[in-house]
Amino acid sequence: MDWPSDWCRPSPEVITRLAGLEMLLLDVDGVLTDGTVLRGADGSEARRFSVIDGHGLGMLRDDGMTIGVVSREASEITRGRMEKLQMPEIHVGASDKALVVADIRARHNLGPGTIAFVGDDIPDLAAFAEADFCIAPANAHPAVKAAADVVLCRRGGHEAVRELAELIRAAKGLGPMAHLLS
Image (cartoon, rainbow, N blue to C red; front, top):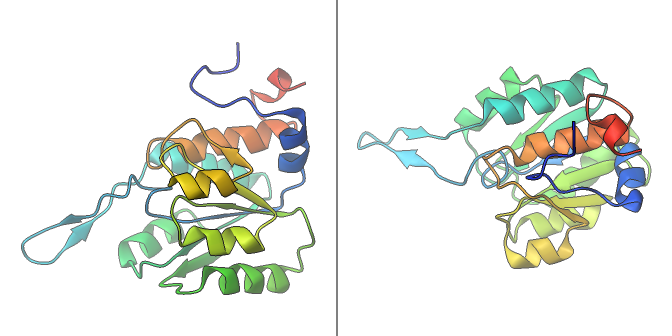
């Protein structure tokens, strides 16, 4: 098996940094979804989440990594999906993402090099300032890509999170991709 051609191959420095992560925090719209919100005439809303991304997050959780979301949108749809994924840190309606990330770090007593944040748009830059490792999906705003330590090859809502999960697992020596990074 070769490294997938539609996934970014990390540098040795990035592999080292990924291996030290203990927590992965994500924005939702544009990262775990493609950013589309469907709205019915009755006011109901729907979002589309990838179960492939969800499986990647589940593998990280089962490996012992703490997973969470920090989203400005106060969506019960998002809350329900993240509860199903058994995330211990679910922050929807978060107006100050930097404050939320700093609070999470303090509560979990996490030191330098341990928190990654995945974001796609300008409000995520505040969270980037508090995170140790910043990641953007391929569809991120140019300013977010410029601030990111890694830009994934896949788009948000289209298995970017699974690409990241496999990168993290491989960097930690876990999963079927690990031997391809050594």
